[in-house]
Length: 104
Picture 1: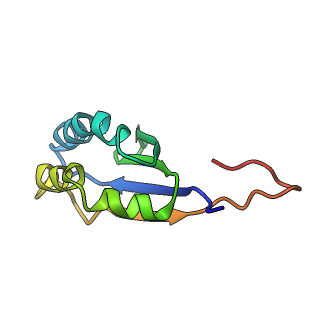
Picture 2: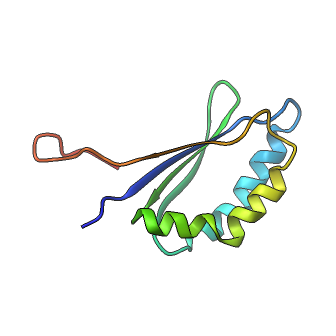
Picture 3: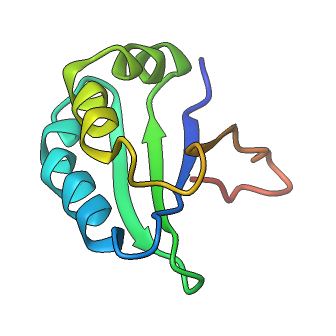
């Protein structure tokens, strides 16, 4: 059985564009929740002024499918020119086993 795919995507808005980037992410989020395999798609505000999406997908394949869908294209278009740097995306998998059962 495949392990769930956990993704952390960090957005660093340019000064003055924080609210606009946040709005784009919040507008698309409800649609992403309906995508096959999406178990979690939650936007968080970092204390340093970045926006962080915490995602959980049933499988890596379903996350990869998500990346090709219209929701991601709309996010990319909506935030174009509004970030200080590229979105930082980290993909990870839980290490839970019988001695350490906790994992997303």
